[in-house]
Image (tube, rainbow, N blue to C red; front, side, top):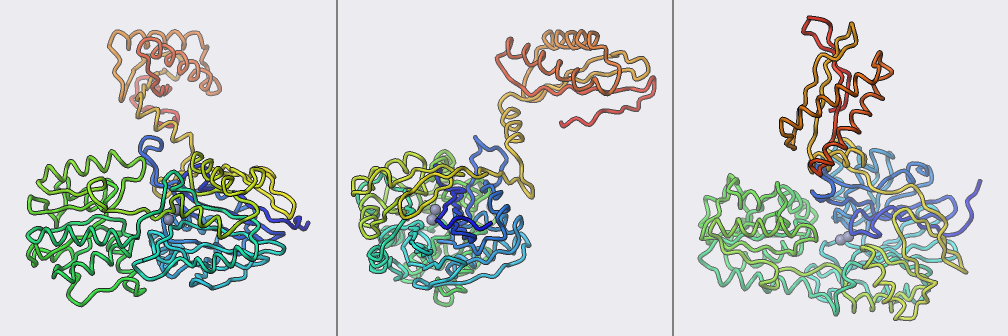
Length: 564
Ligand SMILES: [Zn+2]
Ligand SMILES: [Zn+2]
């Protein structure tokens, strides 16, 4: 059956949150995907999880209709899910800038996933995909090769801003194409999806060049010191600025941290990063250079536990030992949720004797996301009929709605959406259709875990576990003894004995005879023990009853296969 001919947009991630952006856009039988990101988990909410990715069920169900993945730029919240999508759904052609594609290719190679058809595009390129034609429009952001997407379909046009700021003096010379955006606006945009990250900030963002000015001053005023600068590896323009300054003042540069080494290599091969011969040396060779003739550019500006800078601060780095001859510059702002890790890192660097320069002290970092005045400029150039704010927590989306209304877009023409929502747009209206299967998938190592596993982990980390071992004589079905083992919770001996006797009572009254009664018996024990501990200790440990059937005198034991 042919689908109804209207535009449908399904939001699979990146709304009501900052992270794992993914949108599926459908017209008739054709679907294109915009971005496929991941979110870094927080230790508190998702213990032990490596990565959170979108639920791909909707894509899997409709995989035969998917014409391509269009990536706005190479940040993790836009590309981090790609390897998982391809391994679940097979080969889908991908479109993006050469830097974006190089980063994706690297991820796929690491995971040994077949490389699909990668279509490198430049600003101004137009690609056809089924009913859609997609134009890539240059925007400025904190990574090079970032695009807004102008997506034409029969009878309408959708404009997706991607992540952007308006930087009139970009380091790489690739300006945001405001003239083209104005033309697209003039030709009529039906629906705009607009990023909302910095909606709460007044004015405009500062140009990336300003960070260069600050870093230059720091390097010049510390001629006797070794300089260590931590920043995001993907901010190739900032890395280039640091290299340029070092070349001017006669310092050599070493990259430290896996992604810094890898991304600088990729960017160099794409000619997005350049340096004179003899500027860059391997981190293993820094001992050959006078410390005051060296600058180390490293990862770890977010206090990530395994990163180069954290290793240095903990005195665990093989190559870099921090001391009072070091100036460490943290050239980033803590991403919300990372503050504690970043301040622990800064404290440890100070403990090592280094001078530390970070966020609030100087202009050491600028955001890659548009502030209010830039968002207004975008809105006034695109002038969409309908508007959906994206790339923000709900408060950001709400404030972006208010901004759009203040600029004359009617409230009924704006939709605030949640993950899973599907919206239909035709000439007369914008409306919710339904919600598709969507949400979070947790990646732990090589496997996906569900929310039940997470619930268990949180319970274990909060309140520990109590294991009740019931030793049963297999011949006469009598209980021979009960043992209580605990981890992460302390039960006084008297209380533990009381629990044992209570478990024995439950066993006696259960008429335990065979396999089929195990479930009921264990449930009874679980509930009763949980209630006892809650009443006495106000704690909710995980309770695991294990029935161990012993064959008479022999020591051989057969336990049932309980999840432990
Ligand atoms: Zn971004
Ligand atoms: Zn983003």
